Amino acid sequence: MKKVLGSLFALSMLVGSCGYESSSITGWDYNNKENGDFQKLPFVEQETGPNLVLVEGGTFVMGRVLDDVMSDWNSVPRRVSVSSFYIDETEISNLHWLEYLYWVRRVYGEDYPDVYAKALPDTLVWRKRLGYNEPYVDYYLRHPAYRDYPVVGISWKQAAEFARWRTDRVNEQIMVREGLYNHNPNQVSDDNFNTEAYLNAQYEGEKRKDGIPWDGPNSPGYRNVKMEDGILLPRYRLPTEAEWEYAAYGLIGNSLGENIIERRQWPWNGHAVRNPEERYVGEMLANFKRGRGDQMGIAGKLNDNADVTAPVYSYWPNDYGLYNMAGNVSEWVMDVYRPLTFEDEEDFRPFRGNVYKKLLRDEDGIVADKDSLGKMVYVDVELKDAANRRNYRRADNINYLDGDLESQLNLNGGWGTVKEADGQVEPEDESNSMYEFGQTSLINDRSRVYKGGSWIDRAYWMQPGTRRFLDEDMSTDYIGFRCAMDRIGSPQGLGGAY
Image 1 (cartoon, rainbow, N blue to C red):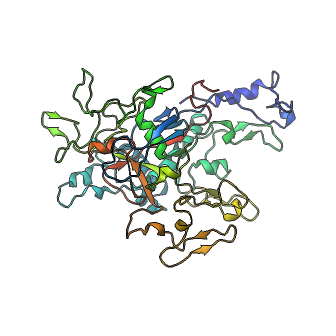
Image 2 (cartoon, helix red, strand yellow):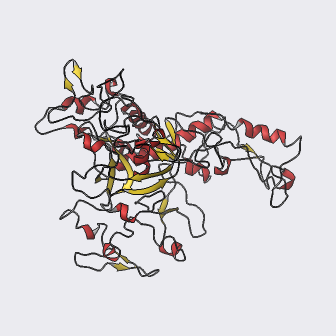
Image 3 (spheres, one colour):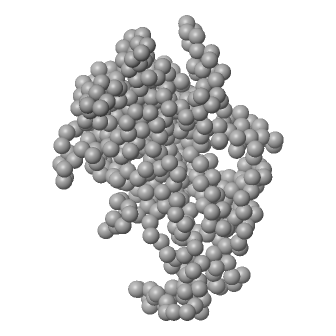
């Protein structure tokens, strides 16, 4: 991680001794205190966060590669494009989650013990009624022998909350590294660094410096860092289904010019799941279940050397340098599941699951104070906010084009409630009545997609185009996750701007 703030302070000295850069549209000087000191600070490109790898975006055929063995018909091939983005090199490990738990207990444990309780993985997912898995229940999360193994027993909601926490810890470390804040391990309750709270002037903390030098109107000579400065990183989040699948294929290593040489079935070339290279010939390329009763092979020649999961740096990375994009654990992605998603989604950055939010403000438009945990309060966009919009009309767009009118009705006996702003019908309950959840289907607006095969799956599920779903509050012993981050600016990076 490179330092960027030193040049900002140097700039304040530089502009005092030489000419100013001026606006190409108004002619007024930038960084001139006689001019109101509108600042244009040095910026090269987005810093790469810890454990992230830049995945250069592009077009690819998303969806099923082989026969639909399960007859789900939920992954019809379709050409889409994804923008460049960052994704974790590895799955989130037990050690990473223990670091998270330690922080949560240290900050919230005394005043809000329920926050810590909600962050705990469900270790009981290992239990099988006719199998002895108690050692994993007792030791898999906390014993150092498993510290580098992927964390499991994590629900989609827990994974999403971890990503939000990680955003704040990484940005806090940047602020400490750049000399703006003192390292403070004694933060408690709402007195903890939160990126959104800081940007909205709701966090003070233990500042080492007053801020960035600034001689603007009514200024004391310093100001807080702003998003416009390019110092703070964008949010960590779960990858979208399209991003995950694109990253898993790693087609950047399988193309010549604008031609993809061979459409991949796996994150590697060929049809086999064993390494064909002479040095490693016959060794498994991923951790999966080879056949009934065969989790790892025979003694003396363990085929994948893993009875359950394997360390996150096991096997060979794909052409993006990403480990275990096939096998080991399946992984949560952001999307809400629908079997016919590919018929409705956009072909650029496809995603189903948008629920638009806004900061809570009072009647005067002033941003509300942060909550008792130190986080900003967000609420759904209201109908009146989108009354004159053409690109969306409501906050919750999960059901958009999902049966159109029928998906908005309560089909179990009522027509729902008509909203005054646009005449749209809202269901009377939170379930998706169209799918008769719990009667004929397990699909609703809380069903989240998970991708890839796991240690307990046959090789079929390791194809990146396969897709399954689970309720966002549930967890298993074979689903983990990794985080992603938006790439801001040039899709190539490292001087590849157009």
